[in-house]
Image (tube, rainbow, N blue to C red; front, side, top):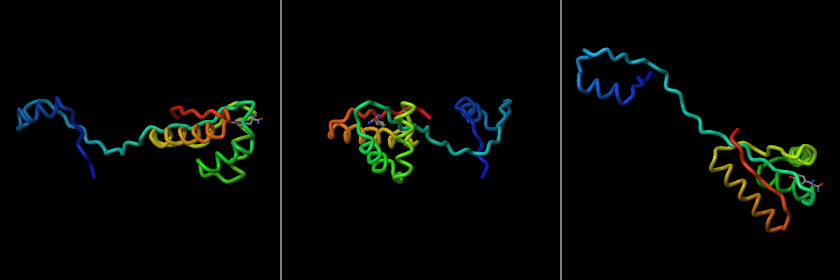
Length: 117
Ligand code: TYC
């Protein structure tokens, strides 16, 4: 299906002058589905949170295998930061809250942040 994309000025001109005596040119455009902006959910390194806790957290909230979670944890441990997943904003914010609540309940200083991808 081909859609004609017009702005408000075009629309007003066309409605005021339906015979198209004005010079309005309608540019046919293929309708592009708008993808939502995506956000990286990332963990930060610290000196106190146990590695096992970080691995279990990644497995639980980011649906990763033990092996994937271990790799992400080690990347954070070595490089200081690592991406656990990329999601639309509302899901990314929920994951960040879940991780922060889980860490606080266990009294670990683990930090989770989001950043536009
Ligand atoms: N650096 C921590 C340790 O040596 C492990 C760790 C990894 C902590 C990743 C946080 O996001 C983190 N126990």
